[in-house]
Length: 150
Image 1 (cartoon, rainbow, N blue to C red):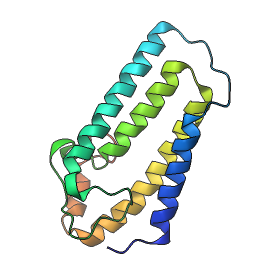
Image 2 (image 1 turned 90 degrees about the vertical axis):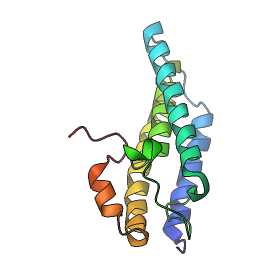
Image 3 (image 1 turned 45 degrees about the vertical axis):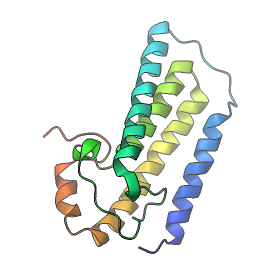
């Protein structure tokens, strides 16, 4: 499918937030060791989810929300339970790391990333519906960022 201006805007905003996340602008807050441990465990889990999801996508992977021409709809692996597990992994990674180091600044960036991923995934799903007739059924069965419980 042909990429639109929205594709480039979403990716540019995502890259800007990633870059902003790298730099620390505010002092960190002191946190209990249990929060540090839990945050870092969440970050490691998020990293693992993101990496396995990228591997699962294989040749269908693209940074743009519009699917690649000729790409197949992946419904296996982590995609069996979640429609956007890469976003899930990144969300867990950035929130976990921010909590783990006590960074209010990084927590703020993580919130903006979560909001961006919500809107980016909504746009992406419109594109996926155009390319894959079975996507509507797939989206009813699976959660956006986390598995559906019921």
